[in-house]
Length: 291
Image (cartoon, rainbow, N blue to C red; front, side, top):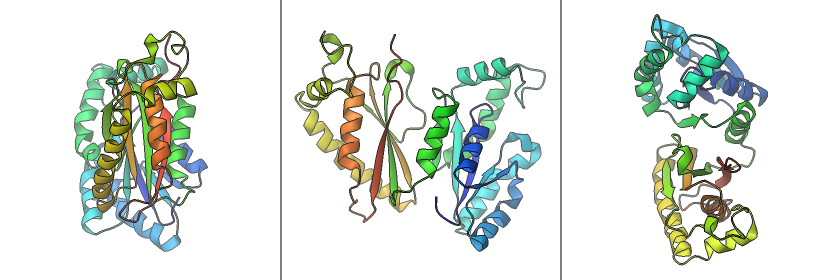
């Protein structure tokens, strides 16, 4: 956590904004809930004067005040006031199930259905989501996993200038919405079809060797690192501090896991050509979900 930092937490109702805010409070951030966007500039000024890191939650509960958020963020950017935007998202079907389980209406559904409220909210948030520095997808995360991800993102005690989350996933469970780069590893021979490897995962040495020793995989990894370096240079220039690289295979059990951990091994602790230190970690999103 850096001093004088302001993070704006927004996103879809039911996606986990409150959980994110509580997790950041546990990390030592001063959290302000449901602030009118017009007060953002004043809050940033207070953070700079008091050496305080502040997380502020702004969402559609603010009714007409919320419509000022895009304007307030644009003014911060125009005046070079340091801030970041964290957008918490989840798939529509997940949001519906969460609202149904709590038996609470969506704040924008009015006399309509939950899906109507979700659709209205997505339309209103589209512009803000497009400028978000971090998009955090909670669709497949429980409360504890979401808290862990927030801790990984914002505790930041490693001195890294660019933190890279490498997310292994299975295509049959859906593509992550918070990825900056999605890569398909289904070109690699599938260990699932080898009887002795099927019950193992990409964390086990026999599977790692089978995946990484497949022809063309080392060349793929080398080229991926080159592509990452090119992207990272641009992202660093734009002031981004976090990147999410999604590595997918069919079920998220063998190939994507092995490749994700190998990429993290290669990236973790290196210094980019721009002079920025890189910290890489792996999140195995779908490991253990297979029946």
